[in-house]
Length: 274
Length: 305
Image 1 (cartoon, chains in turn purple, blue):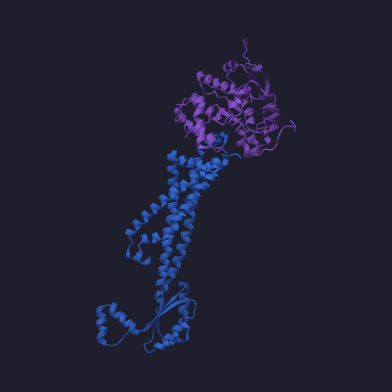
Image 2 (cartoon, chains in turn cyan, brown; image 1 turned 180 degrees about the vertical axis):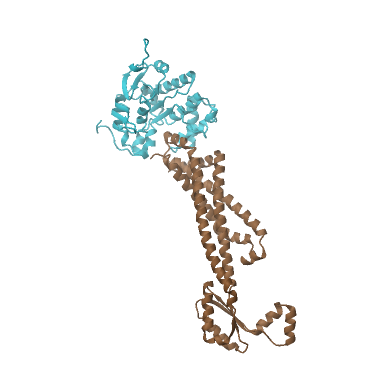
């Protein structure tokens, strides 16, 4: 990428400009008209592990606003690393990862929280704070950005309602089922109205029914205009979604189809004849 | 950091303190124990130096003059001696005053006998106190070699000499032993406290990752720990002050006449009370410092920057 991309300045104010339609409820209209300007762009990106072994090699891909992308591949294929590059937990060894035209490696580490407001994250292990109730876990994401108590009391119940947990606000994580905990995590990811949701194996610890529920929620969120990147190796779910699928194998993109199905790399296909 | 965020981190700190019941208990106990040991060492040192000061004030040299030396002569010797800067005070007691005092306070049988004789067997004397107990030797030597050596019947320095030297010895020992013990215990206390708090933080390490992920800045993650450290320090200081007071009052009940005399007529508890004016605020400050510094160092490794 070159310097025609807009502001390289990485101050917090500039990053705050990247904030999504914060209080703009009319933003829901954008889901169908996917814009041409990529939201995420990988340009010749490689990432080496500390050992020198490549985690990702020569990745080139673009994700447009409003897309629902499933990232598939076996464990160790590089899915998580690719996601970490997007939410700037890692920086590439070579190449450029950009968000709305901004080179992520140029963001001052101190200003990362401002950048991450654009992205909601959900993980296999939920990552909830065990000492806090469902309500407090969601509220925490607002508290750290200095939102007022009124805003918190107003917004948190709404979002808990969306994920279907309006009755469970006072429960602590250990009192909730896996599916419910993941819904709390999703509510927390959504509370700042991010432009993008990154879900890394969100259904890995869930039974098929709960997993289906989470995927339905993600589809619903996507239909409201939020970009969703879902990393999974659950073939049934991916085939059901019927949206763009990017398949990774050993750090490389092996297929990228707009209406894809789960792809298994050649060498891993089971042989009928031994 | 905005006021609302500062207030929130304060509340987070309160919440952590309350919800981590067992760890809070363990941390406060260890911190209290450390502060108690430091306090006790300091208290003993304080009482020791008070005792030494009191004993120092009790030491003096008294010089008895021959019966035929006139009062004018004695007074001129006194004025002469008071020029030396080693000497802090000289009190003159005439033989009449000495007799009066003896008749009032002395053994009544001997007093009657003295009255019977009708003559004053006592001598006039001066009592010399030095600024520093080390100087009594010097003063005694000076008296032996002075021009008025002939007027002196006896200097009762030799009798006190051993007492004085013993005291000098004790003072030095009490101070150096107290100092070494104080430092050793303080070091142990700091290490134990640091380890305990590190353990507390270790048990929460995954939460820090989650907080960062949700967008909390490092400062926002640290501040609750800062306040937690302050609460640990405050609680431990309170416990320590209560423990020390209890210890002092138990000892106070057993203040024997000797100890009381050494402490200048005060009970141990009275000594403790005057000591607490300095030590209580110091305990709070040390407690908070220990808590806060330990938390800050311990969390560093869990916050990538």
